Image (cartoon, rainbow, N blue to C red):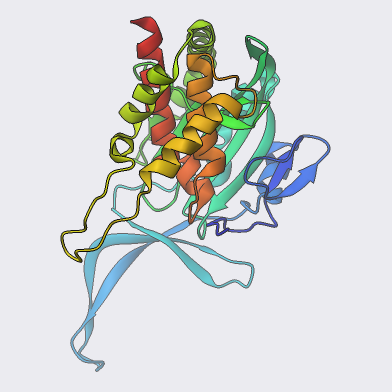
Length: 329
């Protein structure tokens, strides 16, 4: 299984082994300074102008200003590692600065660091903090977290988003309630450091959104379903499932295309009836069939990036939104 983790050995986690199964286990939660060091994030990001050399390599050649800048850092061998290409307006926010809201709010409210790391060469860094309070949906135990991540390549600003993890199967339950305060993003512009206070305030209000999401999950747990209901749910999320069992000829090769839809549907149906903690009776089972498929059944070139930030994250939000709509109609 491939990963784009910058340094697998530098990652850490506290408590149970996370779904990505990477990092060093710690008995006690670290401080912010310890977390940065343990996760291999205690480095400085630089920003320099990029130039284009014109003419031949003679005394008359000169450099042309491209108007763009490179962000970079030193590795352990003091070699420069390029992180990205950004504009002049882009303001570098160091890893320690990005984690300031956790210092100011979360750690003072009983949150503890659970895992942290970086993707690629350090283009994107993240840290995950666990809330002290426990949640339940029926008999299911749900742990509450806040994920904060930052990019050094201009692909995102400083982003905070609450997330939940179902304890029985370690599925991440990425939620969306019409975008109301769930995610807060700050752009890398001139006043980004001053605006970190906005992120701190957003963290304080996140708890109310989590409470609303848990109430919706309780409705799912009480909403009984049939296989017909969940099939419609699965097909709405993944429209290609409607073509399962069909013979499809590739127009370019004239050959029969593989039927990927059938095993996809069968995996979801299996999770609905027999997935960790599922009983095949409610919308809660159907929703968790999807999250289990995304987190544990589907293959990825880079699981952490796909599940945590890209395809998996997007589709779990869609799954929650659609399940919420179905139980509230």
